[in-house]
Length: 160
Image (cartoon, rainbow, N blue to C red; front, side, top):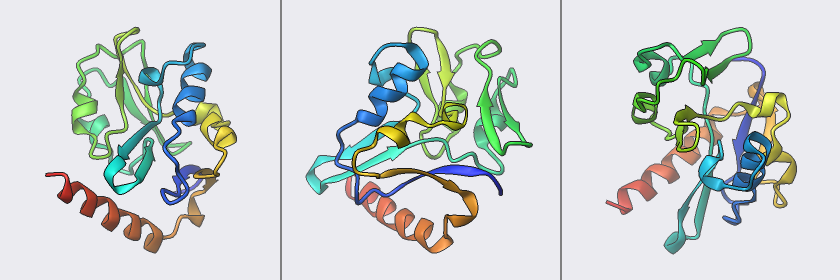
């Protein structure tokens, strides 16, 4: 994979949700975290906060299940995109995503997901703790991803 990706350092995240607010303002003109493309998952009892965004998978389930092809891959830019003009709001992409990245915009009645704010991700610029970063994809190490995945999986098991 090439290009840049959003990477989160969950140990720096305080759960303030400023990333959600600036994302919604950038995309909709109003501060409404329910319309944000980044979501902060919180485990208050563990003091664990995790901003989540689209991982732009190489073989995305969301693309495979979309009946109108509104959800598709831009191979040139290594991105998964949702074309809101083609989206019928069926939410199959939301169900299919193992990361919970797409969400439903209840105002526009379509699925939405992180689009990196067209290469200028607002969540990165406004994150006071620098928990959200925009880095070259080749800087994201496998060991760091594995470490995070193990911690996240353990927290999920504890919540069952």
